[in-house]
Image 1 (cartoon, rainbow over the protein chains, first blue to last red):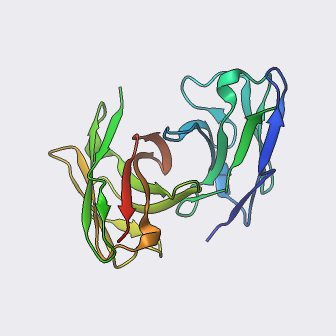
Image 2: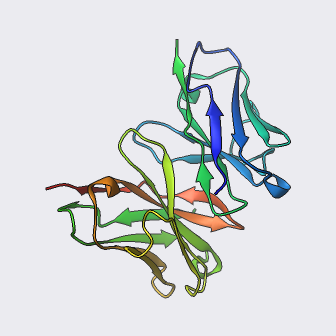
Length: 107
Length: 117
């Protein structure tokens, strides 16, 4: 099983700041089969990024993804109030496994 | 617009059974594999089971293998999850998700299963 790890567990930030979330896969994910999801309290996860780099339909361009080997990054530039949520990375190369999530909270 | 609506979540005793449903609309249901993903209260996401578009190939997480059965009725555009021998640690919100080339791109709002005596 491919194990996904995320860091940090929680980030406390203010609106307007930028944030970098990290995710690491325990082994190579061919063709960057890596997605990022956003989840707000009481809501289902929403797809943000797929293929490590590509924004899903309707996702604003302040969200961007990058990859280096087995390390993946989600960058949110200029946090909006609606961006405070939990973010999960997920690999879909071999079955599906999720990272434990990073909570972005208002400072 | 893609829409996935789960139902069937209830309070059930340990050892009991439950069947969840997921009604799909807004896309060609039979052209997509589908998955169930669950989330225990206050915890992260765990993939549970998947089924291909034709309903022939099924996949399960080790934690539910032998107890849960995924199925689908393409004529009704509905996905199911039969859950037997339920345990307290099966308590979770259960989401169905559409699979587009392995990417889980659309999710329902979830249905809550509580296993407790």
